[in-house]
Amino acid sequence: MNTWSFLVDTTGFIPDDYTVLIESIEADVRASSSFTLSEAEPIPEPTPTEPPEPLPTPTPTPTPEPPEAAGSAFIALVGALCAAATLILRRKE
Image 1 (cartoon, rainbow, N blue to C red):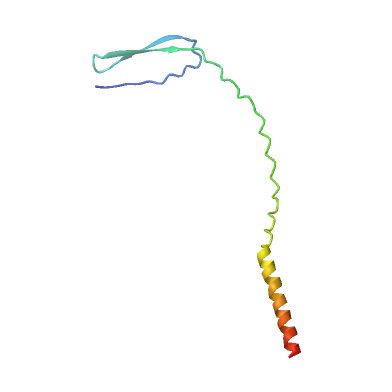
Image 2: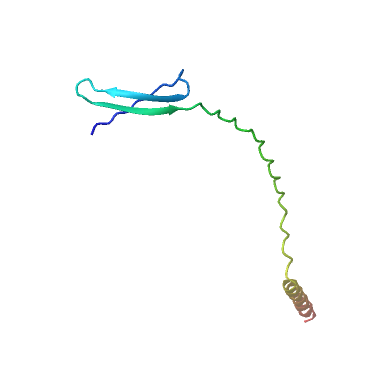
């Protein structure tokens, strides 16, 4: 089966119904097609939108250092006292 198609430049045409008739030169074949040309709908202009406000940049807050464990300070204090006691006892000997 043969097929055919056509492009139509509708510049200058008025909105209406149109029929296209195709006839073969070499064979006794005819075909037709119809199309309706409608008035063009105006394309709406896009409404400009304002860009969104930028979010404020968060200010980094310093992470507080964890407090030293009371146990480690106590151990250091006991160690220093033991060292001092050892030195004092050695001097007496």
